[in-house]
Length: 374
Ligand code: SF4
Ligand code: FES
Image 1: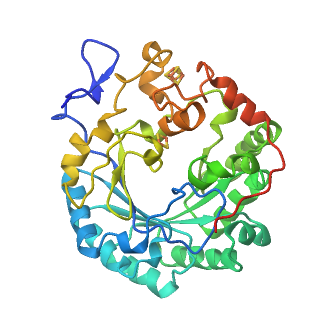
Image 2: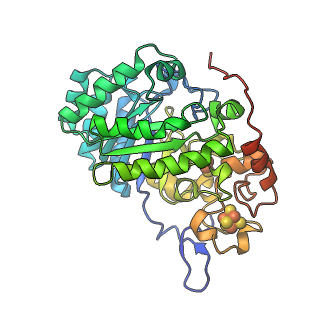
């Protein structure tokens, strides 16, 4: 096994790694289930969802949380699909608290009652993130494919604040709602959230199938940047505004998840441990399972995590670029989707020989209809 992966070399500018000194991951994303009551067209979960019959049982998740705490993970994100569809969610939160993890529930709010939210708080839940689709109720319910979803989300967000639970509002941005960013920020402030995430759609999974229907125009993106800064100023001191704007329009690659295998790991409903949520799209990677291996060993020794850790795997132009330790060559899954080669420089970077692909996508928006799941 190679010992090179992730730390600063004393003799070069490259990131190297010694598995004995590899830092602990900061976060673990536990995808408790792929089942979901909504049908958003920008869902980045895989096209082939893992069935309920394959989901890890309560005891295995408890063990995983215990192993995560021992490994040094600080934050646990309980996600899905909709994690509230797991009947054992309160037990799982209690297990996470016992493991010393800061626990964040990422929920659509649909299927989560006020009584259950109170039980989750009593079990030790530290934070909740409620997704909204829009500020326009009709449009929000249309995108969620669930009548009444917007009203439900508002009620649960208000209840979270009433219970004293720190609240983040998350809204995925696309061509249809990018003009309403100030109103989305305003809604989060009115709900009493401490943080709002303005997150542009990431083109993986179902979102990739809908890319041409979701991609905003360059003019929309330029206007949204100005509007975002004004909205941020309006709530300064009351609400933290975090924004991920579309990298297709920026000319810069994003350090996807802070670098492959550097900060976080994902556990799928059936127990596979992934460096990122779209990693299974990359051919040739072998993913180890928490059913067979302890989390610590997977983090240190899984070939899938080693594949793109650090900078040694890079080719030019990344290999000799001054930004390689900052953006880590961008997103491997996007590089694969756009060039057919996961080792290529992310075409979002203007230095990529494939950057024209991204430039074409960013300007070539059309009126393609949304493709819905199912
Ligand atoms: Fe980042 Fe690679 Fe572009 Fe340099 S060439 S800025 S390392 S993606
Ligand atoms: Fe996989 Fe970015 S989503 S590396």
